[in-house]
Image 1 (cartoon, each protein chain N blue to C red):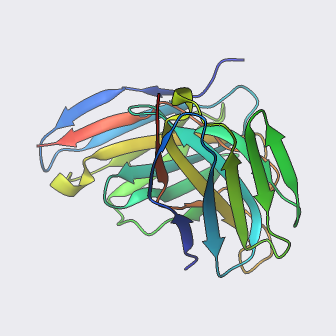
Image 2 (tube, chains in turn yellow, green):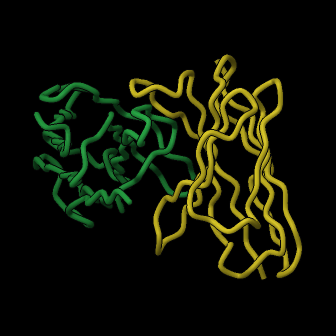
Length: 114
Length: 116
């Protein structure tokens, strides 16, 4: 089974621009979560989608948004980029949103904001 | 807000030594997962523990879940240079409705370096 894929792998943007990141989960997985990883804050939860519905949201400003499509693929969007948005953005999928399921991460998208 | 404390932050040891990484919370976990991450890559799931007191083994790695489901440990026996990496614990908590969703809370991680 193919793993979680994320595109693009690397992205350079300037302040004020917006960006869209894409995630394709493992086939059959319906839950997709997004995380931001920075050296100072570690891994922080952004949001989770299950069957096209946002089921949980982290403490990030409204500039961060996401959606999930009927094939479980997900996108996240960051508008009006700030320097502090530079980070590794990770997507994870799981077959169930229950407690026993592990989350499987993609390789991430490295976003640099200049 | 749940806080998950992971220790130690850094561990530098010689090949063949044993080590333990700890993960603690003041709140009860629904389940807890351990990951290993290499530079520039996403975390790789090592194990999920669900039941209090549960012990799982993965070759030289032993994972233990506390009886009260508030703490966990990862023990590596006879560490090898290939074990070098960032080890992360991550917990799923119950929300007010009693259902655990896919919102992992991560510890700050332990950077392990094993010298040949």
